[in-house]
Length: 256
Image (cartoon, rainbow, N blue to C red; front, side):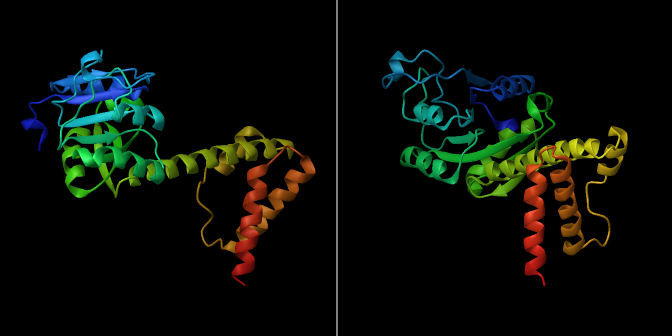
């Protein structure tokens, strides 16, 4: 299904900043859309007749930007004020943050209804999505991903990651590495200052993200150990330094 052939509305449901951004992008592409946000869990199951937001029964693809899994589950089993009654053949694109176990539980709710579930992660932030230049990771079975990609590609370049859950996992790993690097850099800046290095000097030293050419695990272990000893002498606090030194020392012993 190409975007040019879409006549029924694209569903967009969101509780975070990506919901409005996606809706704005879809509108800019002159495609019909059905949008609802924010989503709140109701105390009791809500019938379609008493729902107060939207009607998603005619949406072939529904993009759901809800990070909290319990809220997403409430949407699927009718405990929100949204008239969420997708028909068999609908493809849901989950833009939240799920573990494989959470996906298994969600599949139990949608598969009996003939609804396909895919997972996607937008890299680059809401502004990138609005401008159609985000990087989009997309996972799920081949048929569902094909349909989802025809819509999600409006937000940016799509990279297929594999089975259901793989897009969220890949995005989580990207975030983990970025966070670890940010904390390690912060520790290195503090340790460098404690050792008398200027911020400019530290920045120049740290600007090379990869290890020097030819450096092996033994050399890395020695330098990490020295950094740990410096941290202990200067006492600025360096948990990442300690962890890196321990892991490299273990690798060095295993490679002997």
